[in-house]
Image (cartoon, rainbow, N blue to C red):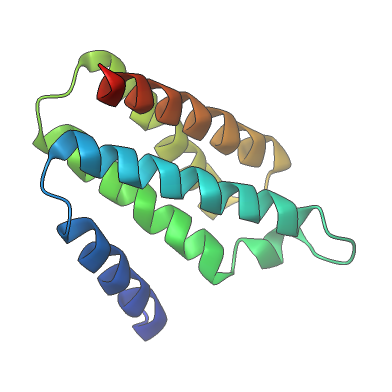
Length: 126
């Protein structure tokens, strides 16, 4: 792990560690994940910016780290199978994007992250 990735992971973990309830942790993660995914998309839409360069940015590193933390949360706590399945969509899209710069996967990442955020928001509202 690079020093920069380690620093970003430590920052993310410090913020996440300040939240005790699993449902609130997952909500915080999904809210921040969608924010960073939207930033990735915005950068990717800029003229003279390639998707490959966006995928090498700190923003993508944070998205990848947050998706890893989402996975940790859903497997470590008793979330419904529906929540676990919703969490897998953005996680899979991040994995595919890391392997190849594919705009379709960026859209899938956005869609999957939105679905996860909507589901977690409803869960926390009830």
